[in-house]
Length: 256
Image 1 (cartoon, rainbow, N blue to C red):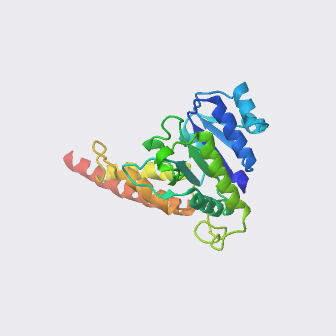
Image 2 (image 1 turned 90 degrees about the vertical axis):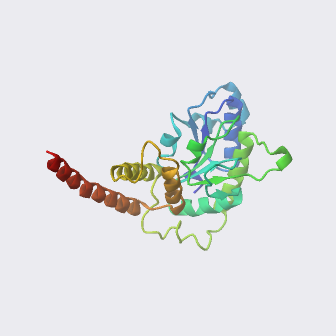
Image 3 (image 1 turned 45 degrees about the vertical axis):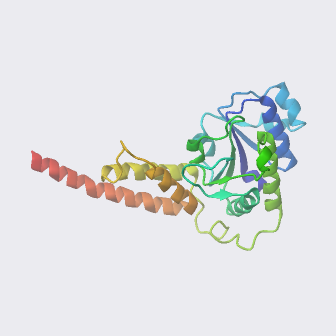
């Protein structure tokens, strides 16, 4: 199940950090490295810092955007060192390992997302995640190198996934659930469909959206709907749009 975990690094600046991340991953049995719009390249320094984990570097995927990197994942967890204006579900690395174990047991791919060396992930990138994880370092010296953060998280994933299956693994995230979790791409498509519908019925003003869709996104990411539930929701939205369309046609006819 460790093969279901992707380590995603966003806009990495230093090639040595990519190599050190590959080493940290291989130490713990992880192998899937995704680089999002990297500034650094996989060069000789990266290979040297990987310390014989160059197979992970050679197989690393390059993606133009975070959305494309996580499109097929059912669970996306972003690492964050700061509190945000809109609170998001927050876990410790240990809690994250437990949830990842449950998601992997259900056949889902998981993305662990790590941000830039200088400023981490943006709010927009964190909003694409189902949950955030915070590594509880000492407050007087809290900064972690990105490869160190990956090492901590990779260790917790290994501990969680190599232990016996938890007693609740057959519950909401478990193997007995009747449909797989919706992927990020499927959930995002439904949210875009919902936003369009809310604009059409006059509930959402696109000129002053405030944080409505951000909070709606948080709601659905926290609920972790499966693929059938996403299809049901999109069917509801399509029915609402169809009901509104004839009403608009009638109004135009009256005006004529």
